[in-house]
Length: 341
Image (cartoon, rainbow, N blue to C red):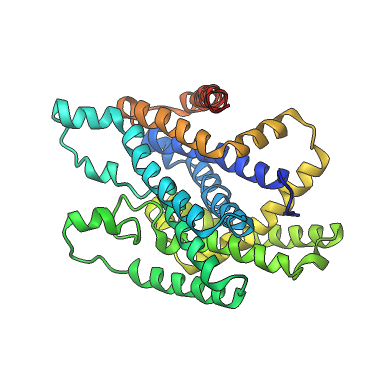
């Protein structure tokens, strides 16, 4: 399904759907009142903004990092730029809040917002790590599996301790470990997802799974995953609804995500094959092709508005905010693309 084409439509669609789900869950987390947030609608929103969103985005990123022909220095530099860009985005999305803190006496710690371990810093650190893994392990999948297990073991240990260290160190260590409330995407455990995509590419390169990519086998696989999801949905939804548990999850949820996302990818593959010229599908692909810009713009919009309406809106207001944010984000992305060309 994921082929080495110049422009992979399935990958673009997966990323496009992921960013749509991220937008809706950011609106739910920051705009919705507590009764909506903890309602069934809130739990569904958080579930959709969990496994099919950040994990799949990171897996696809890892896959194409393995496929990339760019040299070590180029990938290393890109990782550094993404990490630093993530810090700048933290400032941008929290700008209105930081103004209130520094100029209007809002009694909040600004550094937990500036140094929040969000997904862009994670992507940057992951690309740096993958550049090193690619350089020193080449396509030796066994070493990549060992590293993956090592990352899981480190995360299992660190996520169970609360070290008594100064906050100054926490601001930096939170990018690596889930030791603070603002460690949303710590490297340990989240690096397992780009590393899984990286490993997947090397396995596909050896045609390990090629014989299973027949339509009948994919359909059977989807049905099995659908049954598995139905049997485990209560557990996974409960974990997704607990943001701290989701951000700092361990091995079991990682395995669940891999199984679920296998079925999810098969489903998106079938949808694309039947609706490849559909305007909605084309739009989602466009979002996927420009996912970094879309992610940045939607966060700047949502984050700054949230300063003034934080967790105060009802369900219909939440529903209306989504197309508004999506429209403005799309316009800004179009302008950005025009500026780049």
